[in-house]
Image (cartoon, rainbow over all chains, first blue to last red; front, side):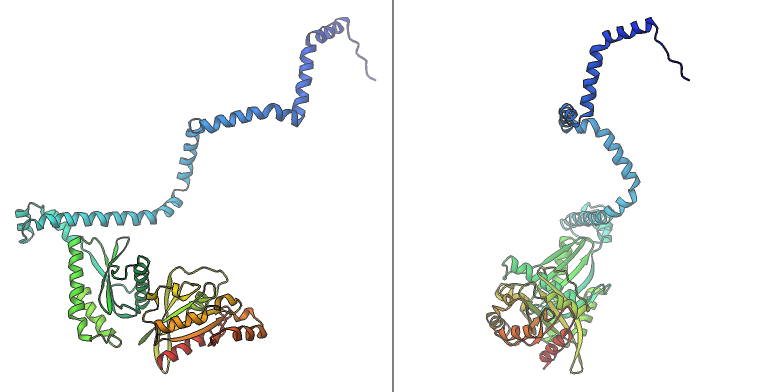
Length: 270
Length: 161
């Protein structure tokens, strides 16, 4: 059995007082509740504020959040360091090796020019008389360009006449065909029938090309190749074409072995 | 060993690269990748008891052969002019193209190849072959490999005669 609780006179009076004092507040609260519970009414009130904040963010995003984002990126970079290195390293390696080769070429050219401006008489004498440091002369001699591969190729067909290679990395007949295709493409594309493609550069590799009447010679060189060394190699290729190739009198079909041996003797064994 | 340069030519999308890949690698892919410029590969075959190295130039397709750089054809001993049997548009210029190639390379052996025979019924195949102005040497399917090896061997034999 529940006991009914009767309000005292004071309590009734207090309720009445509350009604009088809080009437306006209660009615405002009801209105607010109605707005909060009605999606459309709420959107009408809130959307302008969101848009305004969004516009503010668009203009001030970097200054407001730069520190947080930088922190996140730093954290992510640290977490994925190995992954990033794997991605960047191959390209970076090529860029560095090409840059070093280029700098070496420049250095060699500059040393050679200094030496040429005087006379040459042995490294110490040369250093003494030219004023070029002996250490620089040692660098010049140490960064030697290396002939990696040489091909003699029929000019029209692209068929291989002879080849010599340090590492036999790819089928020499296919290389001869593709080199001819590239050469033909460049010469056709630039409508340069009377001119020949003379050099292809790839990373720290250079392919020197010397064209003759019925064949051409392509030589792949690695390392720093100075202008004078390039000239010397071109002279050497010209000499080979004039002196060694003439004995075959244009009959190259059955002479691949002999021509390849000549290439090896003249360009690889030194 | 004797080496011979062979050219694969014809309109675009006729299956030159697919024939090339089927012959060299015994592989076929449904993906169509247009050839840029030219791709060179080789395969050694035997003809009349002698080993012959075939240097095959797979040339990017052109609607007419005079659009192909002349230098690509120079020194070629054999030409495979490929048409798509299911697309008559690929052989509308065949007569002019073959004449052009004969003028350019008088000594070369030229074969007309009707490819994609797997897409046609026997009746359709007969009709397509009949509608081509120049006699078709071989009909092939680079997809199934039908007649591909024989095509290159027959051309090699002709070049070695």
